[in-house]
Length: 363
Picture 1 (cartoon, rainbow, N blue to C red):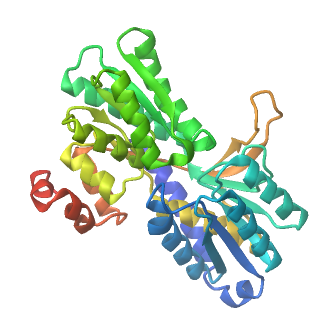
Picture 2 (cartoon, rainbow, N blue to C red; picture 1 turned 135 degrees about the vertical axis):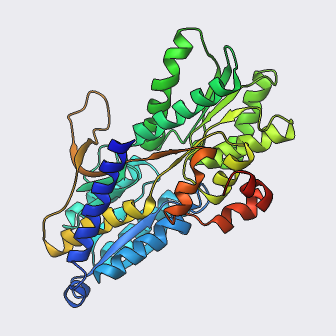
């Protein structure tokens, strides 16, 4: 954990240094155009509008650079239209959270033709022409999810647990990476006959309502006997939790998540979710803003690795300079970490979990 914290702190510091260095260039930067940011939606996770937008806005304000942040609301056509409008209006850099790789790659090709660099934010565009990638180590996110499930099942003393996978969108490369991570932890136990995988389904477009329907089908397939739900994010985990609650199984089944939202953290405290993953979005936003400002000002960018954006296994490697941050596993024991970091407030969590539950858990 100390090593993780060290890497995490180093990247935050690098982003902060980069932004501080540009804080006195507001007049010049303002005359050099603006940065366009396209967020994916507002439905699949509260992070995009509740965290990413304000953090990105604050980072660019501090750097004295104009920014236009818009949301595609899950519409691929709208995503492309927003990008086209931003390029027409004179955007100097585009920061993209893709809805799928083909749509984003087409936008990146147009931007490249216009001489405008692009930054993939949180989600990698496979086969694209992005200049940089800023995200968390998403395989590591999945490993934390998987290990959290394993730890929960051990704590419950369940022999040969019956589990299901409730994966993210099949068109989102992040979902593929999350699954790669948790499967790397759990698959050896399945292969050894220690766990039984009842079902393995992906949820199109991260649709939480559809995720609930899919999980209800999984529960039926399992004859109502499930010990763990490996859910790719809190939206899907909470959707599964609602079904479990309807069947009076909530708290008895281990359920994973990620995002550290107020609802997700409240569910951790009540026991409806067993584990989640905290990703310090402020650091991610600062890292993306620092890269965008460096592109506008023509100064050296700060990265800490590369990521291969090749579209298929047999394709030629496409190494993308990257800023990769370190995720943190969250259980009942350390929900306070997210509060102390200023990412969520005690009030927002306890309003959902209840004051009694918060006090019982030392929050």
